[in-house]
Image 1: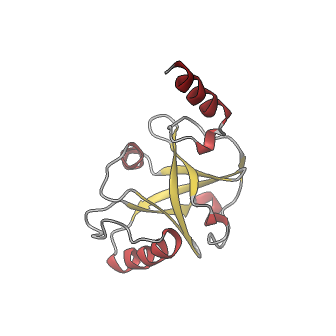
Image 2: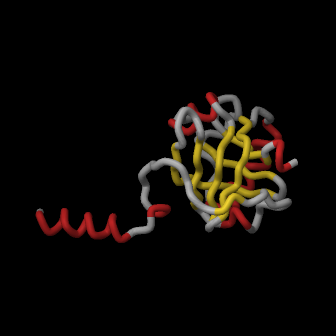
Length: 148
């Protein structure tokens, strides 16, 4: 048992922070203007995502970039990051060393959700498990006003 605990500790310490499944605080990196097209930049399966209310809180999430649109999806779960966005829509996304400052907006439009769902299926191999836009938390991440 002691060997297993030691092995687990070594694995956790040796892993990069962005690969661990734990939440943390403020992300560090170079603040970068958002691109005109998110498709290639958001090609990674998992990115680091930070909410700003009441204190910086970051988690690893799946992300979908579709041209000018960037999305994160919580399904029907009101996770901590969804609740934070309801208090303060200002968020940050870390991809590589770049930090993108964005504003999260919940998607309520069924056609936009369907376009997202088709892209999600193409990227991750399955449709979002709850596809009723009224019951899910799909967030479109828009550039902040200073970037427009």
